[in-house]
Each structure stands twice: as structure tokens, then as C-alpha cells.
Amino acid sequence: MGSEGLTSSSDFNHLVQVANLWDGILFLSLTGFIDSARSETIINKSLSKIHNTDAPYLVVDISGVHAVDSAVAKHLFDLNSAAALMGCEAVFCGLSPAVAHSMVSLNLDFQNVTTRTTIQAALNYCLSGQGYEVTRKSGVSE
Figure 1 (cartoon, one colour):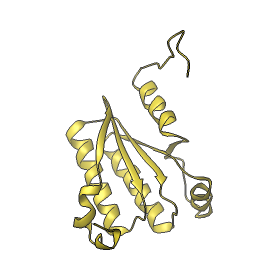
Figure 2 (spheres, one colour):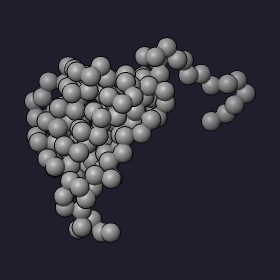
Figure 3 (spheres, helix red, strand yellow):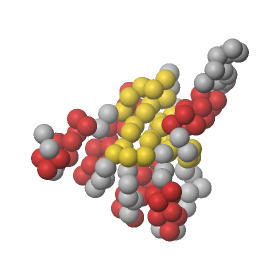
């Protein structure tokens, strides 16, 4: 099915997947254009998964989102706030320089938003928060 057929939230509802990345760590990868209908699906599926798993962390990769306007930023902040109310810390990663610059230009308060540059850095942050320490075995190269 081409993207022209994805017009309603029910059409792309199956495309929004919140996965178990690790024990207590959920993962959501966002790509493309995010409008109000799609953001509702994203928020609802994320909160449902948080509720069902009682996960303390949700890693949200936005590397596939190429533009952020005030409406998209508000939806991301809403996801962050709602997850926090449920005892889950959202960790946003994958912000491109352009997206980071446009979000800053919106004059939003990022005080309660956790960000990391990559999925790996976000996962390390979450694992550390749960008491894990990731170390490379000696003798193993990259």
C-alpha cells in the first residue's frame, strides 16, 4: 500500500509499535510526518504499553522525523508529561541538528525532557538508571 492510502489514524494504527527493548525499557521509533491524528495513536499506544508493562523507561527515537513544528513539539511534550504521570521517563533520542534547532526556536521549556543523541546512549542511560553497567569484555574489539 502506498503512503497515499494512509490518511486516517486507523490506517496507520498498525504502523505504531511500542516494543519491549529490554526489561523495563520500551522503544518507540517515529518516522515521517506526525499530525494530530497520528500523535493521538502514538500517545495512546505508548500509554497503554506503559500501563500494561509498568516500564520505568520509554525510549523515543525521532531520527526519522525530519521536521518539527509547534504542533508536533506539543504532542511530544504531551507524551513526555503523560508518561511521567504514569511513572515512566520518556527518553528522546535521534534529534537531528535541524530538528533540535527548530525545537529550540519554539522557545519551549525542556527542563523536564530527557534527551540523548543516539539510541545506544538512551539505552545506556536507561540501563544505568536500573542499576546495570554496560562494559566491553576484554579481548573483544569493535
